[in-house]
Amino acid sequence: QVQLVESGGGLVQPGGSLRLSCVVSDYRFPVYNMGWYRQAPGKQRELVAIITDGLITTYADSVKGRFTISRDNPQSTVYLQMNNLKPEDTAVYYCYGNWANRQEWWGQGTQVTVSA
Image (cartoon, rainbow, N blue to C red):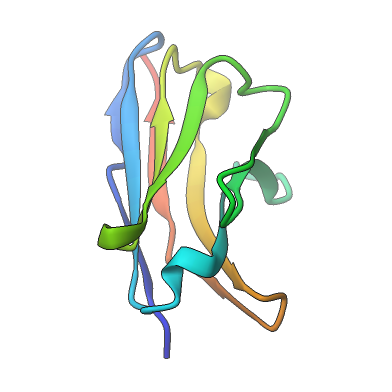
C-alpha cells in the first residue's frame, strides 16, 4: 500500500507563506505525476497544481504567480510553496499521486488557514 504523507499546514496571516511537503512511500516516485488539490468548506475539491514526471507544471488561475510546485525525486517528495496567501486559500490541501494512469493515491490532507 502506497502512502502519501503531507506536512507543513498551519495558520498564517494574509500575505504570509507556507510550504507543504508530501512524502511518497514508493520507489516508483520518479515516474509519478504529482499534484496538490484543495477543498474549502462547502466547496468541491479543486486542482491547485500538478507536476509531471517530466517536470511540466500546471497551475490553477487563482494561484498562478503565488504558488510553486516542485519535486525532489531522491527524497520521493513533492512540495507546494505558497506565497502571498489570501483568506480564500483557506482549505484542506491534499497530495495526489498517479502512476502510469493505472494507480492513484491521495494523502490524508493538511489544513491551511489564512486569517488575521
